[in-house]
Length: 143
Image 1 (tube, rainbow, N blue to C red):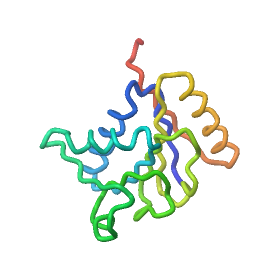
Image 2 (image 1 turned 180 degrees about the horizontal axis):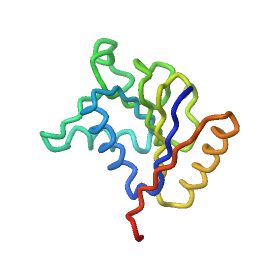
Image 3 (image 1 turned 60 degrees about the vertical axis):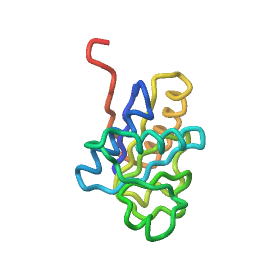
Image 4 (image 1 turned 180 degrees about the vertical axis):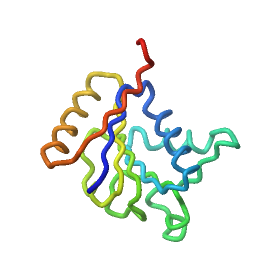
């Protein structure tokens, strides 16, 4: 069964996704980042412009097959063509179709109320299906 963790109170979902991608890459883990159109270009650009010591090799899901196979991190808008199923990082507001084929799912939730409301719907969806959920609060201690 997929391990699901919610990472709440991310002040900047884009920056958090980049840090998570870097961390997972250093752990030799393969990652698919599911992001809506509104974030995809910014995420791709930010990953390409990280400091040289923090370089995160990645590609988009529409890349050629040999590039997808070689890329440890894939940016996708859907999971139907995901080349690997180790870790999924969800930046969208919806429950990802096909998330159950991944070993781990990380749900990133921002600080605004609309994002929190969408996360509550996803949380309820997973709970109703018997998934054990882990909650990580990213808010600074004492805030």
